[in-house]
Length: 290
Ligand SMILES: Cc1cc2nc3c(=O)[nH]c(=O)nc-3n(C[C@H](O)[C@H](O)[C@H](O)COP(=O)(O)OP(=O)(O)OC[C@H]3O[C@@H](n4cnc5c(N)ncnc54)[C@H](O)[C@@H]3O)c2cc1C
Image (cartoon, rainbow, N blue to C red; front, side, top):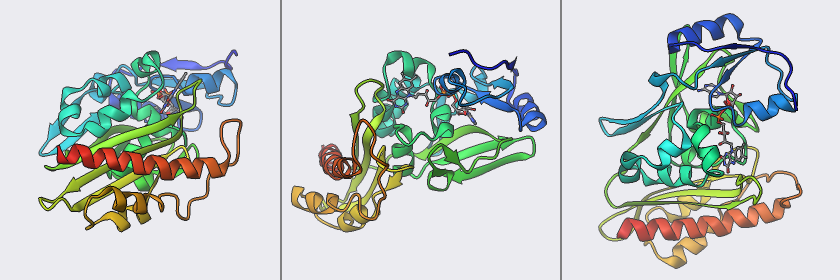
């Protein structure tokens, strides 16, 4: 339970943080809320010899809207997202997802950027990120680049981020009118991590047909994925319970589930994906129409 020795640095700006990371990329790790990294270090599954603490950089915190796009600083805590009036109003899926994470202590310390960068297959944020087509801004000493959520998540705990890059912000479009969303999960009772988490967003036409629908699923396979077959089956259809039930039956088509563990078999995870996709879509449609 005692990590190996490490040097601790706390830069006062993002520019300083990226410079430090460029110089020490092979040995250093970025520290945000510490709720995933520190337990790994205590178990000696991760042994960085240097921590670069970005958790208190004000420029990486906060939520604002820019021309219809919501911009969330990477070091914004889960609690700040959960309680953001802007998110509740302009993209409630994000506030609802944040509220589903762990317990209040975890939500007060953990950050959205830390969760995304960690890419735990059972984390909640990735489902919403792929469902919302989120764009991530990555900064290094060489400049910045933008990458979509679906390109970013590569595999279990593996992302497309380079070792000298810092995730600085998350961008998602704010909701068009007649849009409803829902995040529903089956939580592992001890930690709250998702055995299955489904983020669904639906935009209805004035004729009550499904104009746009996206579904992101976490906890089931090695990375969050879009339920494309469900989306394709539902787009353009009347938003009825029957159409949703039929479409949700395809939520796990072609998906390779995680191996069995003490919590669930692969078959159970796939079953939960289909059941919770149906429930999340029904709730999203209800909210879109109200
Ligand atoms: C008891 C417990 C219960 C939990 N339950 C849940 C749950 O139900 N659902 C859920 O989704 N999560 C859960 N978590 C995880 C929690 O959400 C973490 O906060 C989150 O996974 C990591 O965020 P962090 O800010 O603590 O990151 P850290 O632990 O500081 O960092 C995690 C990793 O990301 C890297 N990193 C951090 N920020 C950046 C950045 N901006 N750019 C580049 N790399 C970065 C670090 O180098 C490290 O490799 C739980 C954690 C605990 C301890």
